[in-house]
Image (tube, rainbow, N blue to C red; front, top):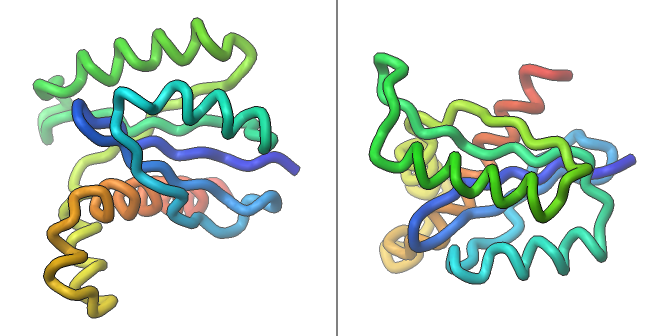
Length: 137
């Protein structure tokens, strides 16, 4: 089977998570500088079979767009252009960063590791992906 890739897109950094080939467990993959994201994805898709890209859609509680929504929408257009056969689906990303910080506290991560924004982004992508798996299994 193919993997599902989750993207927590940000202006500076982007967190990535991926399922196992059986699509049972979500695991953090990495966080990359957003400027390096497209080359990273090209290489990753050469090495792994991915059938679905989930990308977090930033929305306010009233469903209105946030300041980051246009950035994500522009990136989705780039994804479609670069990988026209890949299925891309948006998922709600509200509070995933807060949940990521809470999870790091519960895991007992050191303060220095919790302050590393790349860890927050990777864990937020993992939370989005696991929530998707929980709803679709």
